[in-house]
Image (tube, rainbow, N blue to C red):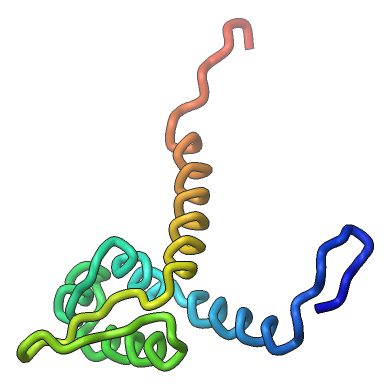
Length: 118
């Protein structure tokens, strides 16, 4: 890492590349929804497809990409493959970002108060 004027250090090119790849995967609304759902609890592909409103093959493909990137893990339970977020930091980032955006959107849903005389 390289120090800059403010005392912070720049991450290495490798770290920036890994972060960009992770954010690139999460740039898909479908994959972000899957990670959001898995951040709330483990699920199999059928449950995820129902929750996110996607076709089973598409959700399965998204899970494969997320798993290859190390963002999602899985384990076998009998005949089912159960998926979970494999990185607690990813859960934190997704919950923080989605939560903040949800909070910002909430006031827009409430009509603005009318001022007298205007």
